[in-house]
Length: 363
Image (cartoon, rainbow, N blue to C red):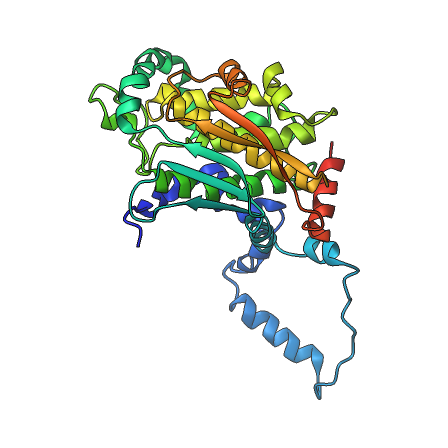
């Protein structure tokens, strides 16, 4: 059995309303009306409707007198699901497409990979703790000077990334419900990948390397590498880049050009170093992971036949993190090696292809 523990996910910091499945379409709270009749005038609602049924049905021998409506297809059936079942079906489907491989379940791993339908698309080579202490810790001293200016952002970003991307594109349950569905699904998918990697790598946090780091937020109990916030932010930026912008989908070029979504993603990642809970290398690893997984998903949903693969040499990366440095790393094989992997055809269910088409149609 693995010797590392998730520590109960620490409530997962409430990342963007993970527990708010019913916010998926915003309407599934209406069944709470049953408490409405408790104004002090009678029995429970179930008792009231029960007596109404008894008083109106009359004698019934159990024979049917209506024919169920048959859904035209799986997309029509999917749309009738409640918020939580929608999310559970979507999560199961996306989760089956991607997997994490770590060689050891007993000792901390030095390399971890992510697969898409069995093909490796991301390889992360981690730095050891001594390397981080010698080559990365000093960045936290410099970043700490920004704390007075960034504390508001940092606190909101603990549990809410959507609001920052919502500065770039309209994200509303009434206007862009399917974009939001994909947004939250990708967020949950990415967490299901980066958390096992953090667990398997077991990299120490900055607070473990100096008493003087003194983060301005509580340091999470799980490992530092890769940064979950960076992974999620860059995955969301990649997904939303495909939806928000009416141009060819090319994340590497968009990062080089610094589109608005990627600038927000980079700032979210950098704020974790400002806060004192992550090294720049953690963010570089998360950015590579998030962009690559989301790009593979988008290309798969778009029916493309191949996607980039990336290997991050975190074991030797000594630099800082920002969007320009990420762009440089994506063009430097000594930091990030890039190749390609085939994508299978016929693996996207009809209902998911229709959901994706509906999300694209919102823009």
